[in-house]
Amino acid sequence: MFSMKSLQLVIFLCSTLLLSACVTTIDSRLTRKADPEKAVDNYTQLGLGYIKQGKYDTARARLNRALEINADYAPANNAMGLLLQSEREPEAAEEYFLKSINLDEDFSQGQYNYGMFLMQHQRYDEACEYLSNAARDVEYQQRGKAAQNLGLCYYRNGEIELAISTYERALQGQRYNTPILVNLTTLLIEVERHDDAEAYYARFLRIVERKQNQHSSNSLSLGIKLARYFKDKTQEDKFAKLLEQDFPESEEYKLYKASL
Image (cartoon, rainbow, N blue to C red; front, side, top):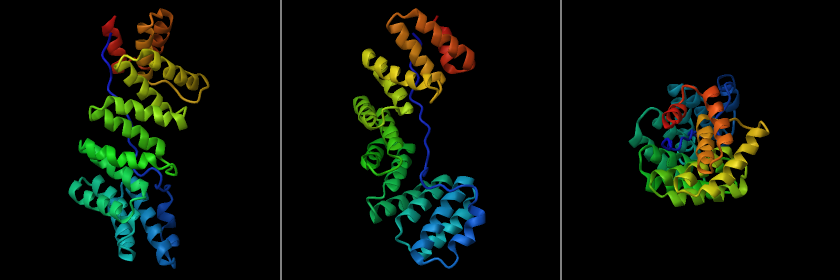
């Protein structure tokens, strides 16, 4: 049996607030003659848009303007934290993240971004706390992403049962969240709960069959592991063929070949 691959999750920062590529053209139009409350929000969102584009100097100018208007606007402080994090200034970034949360504990995007910052620095106990705050907010648009990364946080902190329960709870409201289904299947195989793993993997396969998602090299390797456990050679060969066909250079395929 080839070895388990660690969980891989793509981390998306400030995904709910980023603007489209048109931020440059709308910059002056949005901020000119706006009332202070609207202006500070406009400058904040423009700053986030420029961070996404990698235009850090322009982003700083917009965020500084937002903070000049209202130094206690939580989203602007959070955005400045993201900018400083992107520029690899962790101490300064953390100050802004904490100020944002202290100003508005109900600002779940701030809780999420700080949690991700802490996880990046391997401060998992703290990170899980803030990610949990974001994941509990039923109105937070990125709640699923928060739950996904909360599970990863618990896993990296050596709390695998908490990671599993986090994923299972998240799937009660998001039955077809494919990253969570794949990650949960991975963990259940790791703790040898193969029957449960097979049930969640079957749900993932239904999504793939409906062409609502596609296999990754990781998801195919999970199929091979389950097929081997249940001694289903037909299924094993099917997943192995897809792995060879679609991901011949992947680490999963190399491990599979080595396991033969």
